[in-house]
Image (cartoon, rainbow, N blue to C red; front, side, top):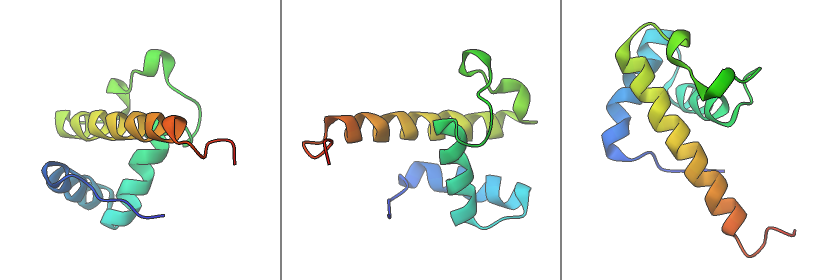
Length: 83
Protein backbone atom coordinates (compact mmCIF):
# COMPACT_ATOMS: atom_id res chain seq x y z
CA UNK A 1 0.00 0.00 0.00
CA UNK A 2 1.18 3.48 -0.68
CA UNK A 3 -0.23 6.89 -0.02
CA UNK A 4 0.72 10.50 -0.35
CA UNK A 5 0.95 12.82 2.61
CA UNK A 6 -0.45 16.29 1.97
CA UNK A 7 2.39 18.79 1.55
CA UNK A 8 1.20 20.86 4.49
CA UNK A 9 1.61 17.82 6.79
CA UNK A 10 5.10 16.79 5.71
CA UNK A 11 6.98 19.20 8.02
CA UNK A 12 4.93 17.98 11.00
CA UNK A 13 5.64 14.35 10.12
CA UNK A 14 9.36 15.06 9.77
CA UNK A 15 9.37 16.92 13.10
CA UNK A 16 7.53 14.07 14.82
CA UNK A 17 9.92 11.52 13.29
CA UNK A 18 12.93 13.51 14.45
CA UNK A 19 11.54 13.86 17.98
CA UNK A 20 10.95 10.08 18.14
CA UNK A 21 14.28 9.19 16.45
CA UNK A 22 12.51 7.21 13.72
CA UNK A 23 12.16 7.48 9.95
CA UNK A 24 9.40 9.56 8.40
CA UNK A 25 7.84 6.36 7.06
CA UNK A 26 7.73 4.82 10.53
CA UNK A 27 6.28 8.08 11.89
CA UNK A 28 3.45 7.95 9.36
CA UNK A 29 2.74 4.31 10.21
CA UNK A 30 2.67 5.06 13.94
CA UNK A 31 0.40 8.06 13.45
CA UNK A 32 -2.00 6.11 11.28
CA UNK A 33 -2.06 3.22 13.75
CA UNK A 34 -2.77 5.64 16.57
CA UNK A 35 -5.47 7.32 14.52
CA UNK A 36 -7.12 3.99 13.76
CA UNK A 37 -6.77 2.83 17.35
CA UNK A 38 -4.43 -0.03 16.44
CA UNK A 39 -1.50 1.00 18.63
CA UNK A 40 -3.12 -0.22 21.82
CA UNK A 41 -6.15 0.71 23.82
CA UNK A 42 -8.09 3.71 22.65
CA UNK A 43 -8.01 6.77 24.88
CA UNK A 44 -11.41 7.75 26.28
CA UNK A 45 -13.40 10.09 24.04
CA UNK A 46 -10.65 9.91 21.41
CA UNK A 47 -8.76 12.42 23.53
CA UNK A 48 -5.03 12.18 22.98
CA UNK A 49 -4.01 15.48 24.53
CA UNK A 50 -2.30 13.87 27.50
CA UNK A 51 -0.34 11.43 25.37
CA UNK A 52 1.98 14.01 23.79
CA UNK A 53 4.27 16.61 25.25
CA UNK A 54 3.82 19.48 22.83
CA UNK A 55 1.12 21.29 20.88
CA UNK A 56 2.96 20.31 17.69
CA UNK A 57 2.58 16.61 18.56
CA UNK A 58 -1.12 17.13 19.21
CA UNK A 59 -1.48 18.92 15.85
CA UNK A 60 0.24 16.03 14.06
CA UNK A 61 -2.08 13.55 15.74
CA UNK A 62 -5.12 15.66 14.85
CA UNK A 63 -4.03 15.53 11.21
CA UNK A 64 -3.37 11.79 11.45
CA UNK A 65 -6.80 11.19 12.94
CA UNK A 66 -8.43 13.24 10.20
CA UNK A 67 -6.47 11.32 7.55
CA UNK A 68 -7.39 7.97 9.10
CA UNK A 69 -11.07 8.85 9.30
CA UNK A 70 -11.08 10.03 5.68
CA UNK A 71 -9.37 6.79 4.64
CA UNK A 72 -11.94 4.74 6.57
CA UNK A 73 -14.79 6.66 4.91
CA UNK A 74 -13.17 6.20 1.50
CA UNK A 75 -12.86 2.44 2.05
CA UNK A 76 -16.45 2.18 3.29
CA UNK A 77 -17.67 4.02 0.18
CA UNK A 78 -15.67 1.76 -2.14
CA UNK A 79 -17.81 -0.34 -4.49
CA UNK A 80 -15.49 -3.34 -3.77
CA UNK A 81 -16.07 -3.37 -0.03
CA UNK A 82 -17.75 -6.79 -0.25
CA UNK A 83 -14.51 -8.41 -1.44
